[in-house]
Length: 265
Ligand SMILES: NC(=O)c1ccc[n+]([C@@H]2O[C@H](COP(=O)([O-])OP(=O)(O)OC[C@H]3O[C@@H](n4cnc5c(N)ncnc54)[C@H](OP(=O)(O)O)[C@@H]3O)[C@@H](O)[C@H]2O)c1
Image (cartoon, rainbow, N blue to C red; front, side, top):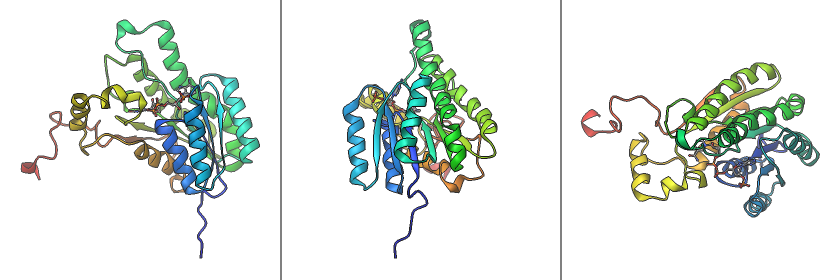
C-alpha cells in the first residue's frame, strides 16, 4: 500500500536555489514530493544541475534567472511558478549575500546591496506571492541569520538586514493572517560557498567548530529541515516566529566553549 505524502503535488518556490542552503531546501522539498521552481542570479550551471537532480527524484522543476532585490523579477518568478506548478504552497526567501565587512569597508553601494538583497528581497517575494498563497493556504519562510541577534563589528549591514528579517516576518505574519503563515529561520555557521573562506581554513574551521555546543558546523540540510518543518502542516499554528538553527551557537554561556566537560555531567 502506498502512502501519499502531504507534499504531493505541492508547489514550492525557492530563491537562491542553485547553491548552498537554497539547493538543500529545493532538493528536500522534492524528496517530500513537491514540485519546485528555483530562482538563481548568475550561476546557471548549478541551477540546471539542481533541476536535473529533482527530475531524477521523479518531481518537476524549473530554474528562473532573476535578481532577488528587484520587485519585477519577484513578480515574474511568481507568475512563472504559477504557470508551471499550477499552485504555490510555499515560498522560501533564501537568496542572500554576505555583508560588507568592517565599518571602514562599508560603502553606500555595498550597504544598499546587502539590505536590498537580504531584506527587501524576501519582502518583494512574499508581496508578490501573497495572492497565490492565499489561494492555497500556503506559507512563506525567510532565511535570516543569528547575525540579526548577535553583534559583530565585521558585519554591520548584514546584522542589520538579518535583524530586519526577524521584525519583518512578525509584521508580515499579521499582514497575511489568517489565510497564510510567515516565519523565518536563523542559522549560524553553515558550510556553503558563502562561508568558504572560514571552513576552507583548518584553523578557522576548527575555532568555529569548537564554539558550537553540538560540536560541528551546520550543514545546508540542517537548515532545510527547519524550513520544511515551518512550511509544513505540522507548523500550522506557528506564524511570525524565527526558529534558530545553530547547534546552540548563540546560547549565552558563562565562558565561550564552556560546555560538554565531563566534570559537569
Ligand atoms: N552559510 C551560512 O553560514 C549562513 C548562515 C546564516 C544565514 N545564511 C543565509 O542563508 C542564505 C543562503 O546562504 P548560502 O550560504 O546558501 O549562500 P551561497 O552558497 O552563497 O548561495 C547563495 C544563493 O543565493 C543566490 N543569490 C545571491 N544573491 C542573489 C540575488 N541578488 N538575486 C538572486 N539570487 C541571489 C545565489 O545565486 P547564484 O548561484 O546565481 O549566484 C545562490 O543560489 C542567505 O540568506 C544567507 O544570508 C547563511
